[in-house]
Length: 512
Image (cartoon, rainbow, N blue to C red; front, top):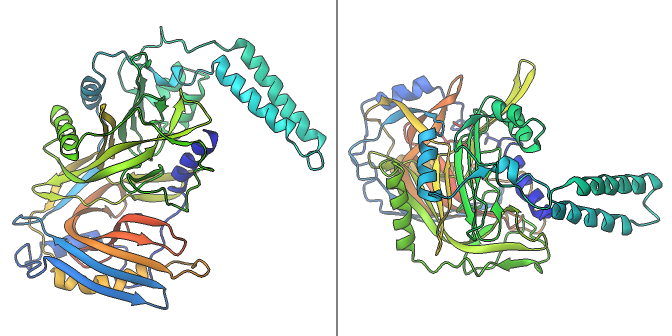
């Protein structure tokens, strides 16, 4: 499990490592939002005749110098509305009311315990396993390469662990560690549980935010975990998981989505072989399917379960089903499973996006990211795209994520002026190869291959000048599909997003 844990966390850290490079073009600029709003307010094209004669769009584009080929065979999806607007939004916290509703629907009367205490308990079995690992490391040191100092360090670690073993409990102590089911300030948790490594870690990432971490004891045969984070720098989320094989990790410091496009998780379509050369999952001998967590439920019934949950929690009016499918997913289990196995289960993963008056916010598994010095502090900020995702098996809802909730502050432009699809497709054909060109090409590669299968007119969040915490939802033509780079890595989602007001290309990582 140690190798897999590093893999998951490395992927999350990489999300904060840097920004996507902007193509060198006058079309891609740091937008003047006042000018954008003025253009949206102009009298011109609204929804009327915006995509006449375009139910589909087909073309082929190739740039041999950039080694990018694009095949477009796409539906053109236009919302059936009279107008599209411009909204000012900001990220909203997960409320205690929302937490209470999720507990009521997904946990019911089962007792929740303080996950930061009980799952961080190192029992004798946990410590013994680590002692055996270090003894193996020591025994397998190459005598010609390992110096005496290294051997002493290994032996010192073993001695420290043996002392810990003598004082460790035989099993997790549940009684007395019941959760109160309430959100608390991270600072308060760090103070209340002084010396607890988990809450120290959470406080280091979230000193001014709120946190909740509850788990069940698993005595009914299923281990559940539920986390809420409100973090001004790394995002807000509520995340729930349930498994027969142990406790899945729900306490990432970064609010991210692992679903249909993979994210930092190991996810692939059911019925296909694992095929992602960018991710090493080991030699395969310990990579097994959990057949006791079956999924024979139909997609229709899975969607019905999701939408029933949305109604019970008061979310159904603002979210509409966007995409989904039957997938295999490796479970990121941190407690309760044998360390010599990497298990995966088949499940429906269903995504819902915010829908405003009949128009959806288009999804892409990216986030606005910025970092830099603010006085004496080096600050990183991360604001992902809002979405809800469900994981469903025959057991019911076994996963629920609500990432980066939004609140609409005001309607900035009621009826926005927009460019027609005829105008926008010319920008797409000019820019798609430039934006998706690689800095370096793998040896003997044919370059980057892009398949566009859907063009959607929807909303995308863009940044406002001098304000990280607010943004504008603006009309956008989103060209969606799959991209395969020169190293064979495949990614699905938004290939190019073009602002429907001014025709600029939107970089979701930069936020404009």
